[in-house]
Image 1 (cartoon, rainbow, N blue to C red):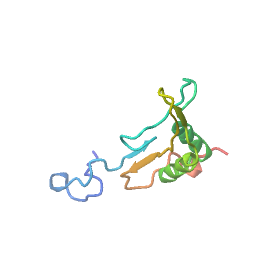
Image 2 (cartoon, one colour):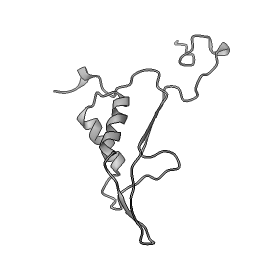
Image 3 (cartoon, rainbow, N blue to C red):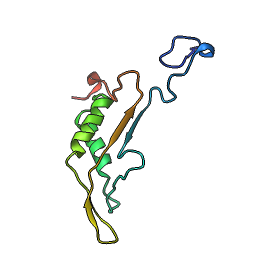
Length: 117
């Protein structure tokens, strides 16, 4: 049977110190916590963030998740969703997608060798 220890530590678990409770996790978000994110009014449309994420994955299924985050930011950098508020105010908002990572290794959804030609 396999034995495991906290990632990034070579000591037995009883003697180890957990370095980070989110070790080996990654988070993609349309905006920073406590900020606004936007979605279309029409139910059949997807949010700019979701569309950008899917488009980037379709363009390169073997990209590293760090590159994925960079590509999402590049696609949304010049997109400013216009919001019409109930009081008549109209504001074009800048998007600020976020990628937070505590990965200790590179992560790819597919290896380049696994891609179909």
